[in-house]
Length: 94
Image (cartoon, rainbow, N blue to C red; front, side):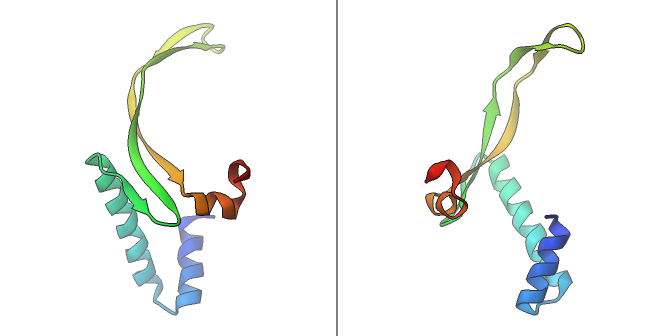
């Protein structure tokens, strides 16, 4: 499912204009990313938590290059589903 699909479904269900729904979704994504970038946790009760984490640097073997290569540390955004979301999706047998 794409962002466009989500916008279309919400537009049909809510009766809102497509432009309004797109504005809300874009702002939601923007606020989540801004907060994560500041190191804040974004908790949506009953859905899950978004937060920023740092992956450590490591060496891995590249079969294409035929040698070990170094992968530097980087920051990434993590989503951890709530227990309610896990139960609804039957994740990890919750």
